[in-house]
Length: 418
Ligand SMILES: Cc1cc2nc3c(=O)[nH]c(=O)nc-3n(C[C@H](O)[C@H](O)[C@H](O)COP(=O)(O)OP(=O)(O)OC[C@H]3O[C@@H](n4cnc5c(N)ncnc54)[C@H](O)[C@@H]3O)c2cc1C
Image (cartoon, rainbow, N blue to C red):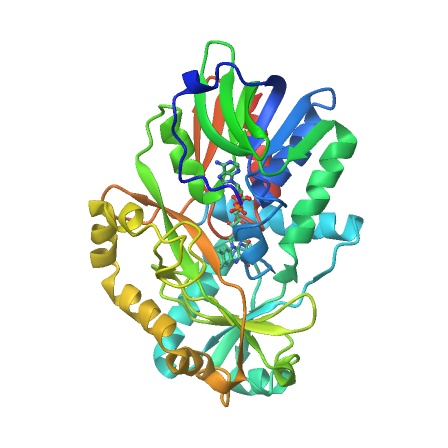
């Protein structure tokens, strides 16, 4: 792996290195970069498109480490990018899977209240669905018990549209289609190290295993996920937010739980933090996971322990906005940290709606790290964010449901460029 923590040596250093040119340079082969490559190759079949990723394969970070849910768009503020793109992305993702024989299943999502106190919040969420043009089905305790005998709930509602897929497969497919439609190539182990916007385009300094390279592109599209803010700053653009890494830890359930539920089971979330709340997820592959929690972690790619070599304590915790964030959301921060420190506590969260599950039913499973933008006052930026200059377009914030929304995000990128 080529690490990107070293972005930032002067371009002058690379004056004698090999130089190539392309019309479009996309940074990142996650689902967003892959979707942009696909849409761009459709729109500009004669263009040279290069996708650069620092890893040896596509979807190595968020895209390959998520829950695999094709969201229907329950929680998002009506009219926001998230609400609109998620709704359009649901259809577009399933159509793409269908047309290209990628496994997907429209299993539906059951959002459950586990005690009477949660019923008002459940009702509010149900009404939010209507604002987002969904038509959920309210279910009584008895109806839930009939549909999902292993699940305990006093009430709930079913969003039939929600599905599951494997986003690594989706990203791989989009990149392959892009290479069939245009001169589009993905260059792995190519780390964008530095960049400079000029009058005619953007000059990129790339690090490869064979040494440095320089690339001149007419247009740069930054889809670097958790590193997107570093690239925006390095280009000299104003960036009023920072990406913070929130680790999401999962467990795989032992095989007797493979068919524990027919639907995805979600608890009622805190309306201010709708992405929190560990859920029970049927996965493509026939197994079930629980998770993820959301814990501010020590590095942008610190998947291991707190003291792993990926830890960047100072980079994450050395800014006042982090401490403002932790203070602002202190109740949730403590709850999420508790679930990270104690497997037994994590299991209790799941057993509220799936009684009988204990930590002994948990097998290890890969963690993911959410790239979440935070503004200078320590507030989470919920919606997708785009930043532009004459020759560049940066996808600045693409947290969940950006996997579901990747195709409409790519449409937005393209409509802003032409
Ligand atoms: C735990 C978790 C669960 C989630 N669950 C869901 C879900 O169920 N459904 C859903 O819709 N969304 C979900 N999401 C959100 C979704 O996965 C992300 O929003 C989406 O994958 C973002 O895609 P991306 O392409 O922007 O980023 P990424 O997938 O992170 O890709 C960024 C790419 O850029 C590359 N890169 C970075 N810097 C450089 C550089 N300097 N040079 C070259 N390459 C670089 C990286 O190697 C990486 O491949 C989840 C996210 C997490 C973490």
